[in-house]
Length: 395
Image (tube, rainbow, N blue to C red):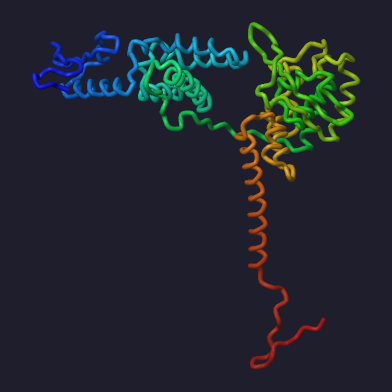
């Protein structure tokens, strides 16, 4: 805003040789700073300075020098400063950044990344053949990094990740095995892995939880398994034994009685006597790696033989979750506890699917009722001769 002498009360504007206008203003420390871009018209530069003045008055101004750090450097530091991340999560974040984010945006200063740039980056990923699901994961990671830059470090004012729908995945519907298929798949496994299939499916376990079970976690008398740890595979390091994925992951799960004979036989034939002996191991007694399991048991051939080609091992947990959601009287909290989830979100998905199935049954019954009502009766009274009374049938 200009004062009575024609001089601006805050900041200054000058016309450059190019014909564009440059805006400069003093920061709270007295140092002069320039707008990050020049302006085609003087009123635009004036509006910019007015906005900066208001931000300073409200305590919302952020020194643009702070936002000049490159996204690549800031994202790496963002991961390093989160010591509670699981090793597998750290590996996944670094891989996602290196594969899908930093090749496109890594050299950009944080304060130069805007929403159109983010939208263009996402569109480019999809055009290059990256799946919607993977693009959504990369977008959510970028949004989380930049949200820290906004709220905690105050390097930028707003998060540019505001592309509607970019965080949403559209994964294909995963198959659910029937109970006979679960047992059929177990029968097609080598003897030492049959119980693994049943415990994983009926216990709603993750791979890392199942292969981390030890003899002390199995109670054949009451028919339960206790989940208190999980293996995480980390390239370059190996298998890392740690806590489950979440606090709710520590749980005790009751197995159906039909699965116990196979588990009991397995404990006698393939598990060491020590309480810390792992329940599921390879022929050599070493812990199982997820990447080697499919080849070890000829998984593709086995699932194709039971009519479930393309089934993933994790679909066994999905099957168990689905069966749990269909149990009469199972509450949302019951399902959450069995699945090992802190948040009700996943359990609600299974309950919603169960309600849809139930509604489908009701709709089918309704159609059958309507069809029955439309059918003409087979016992209509016979008409007598014209003008007479209806004839009655004799039994």
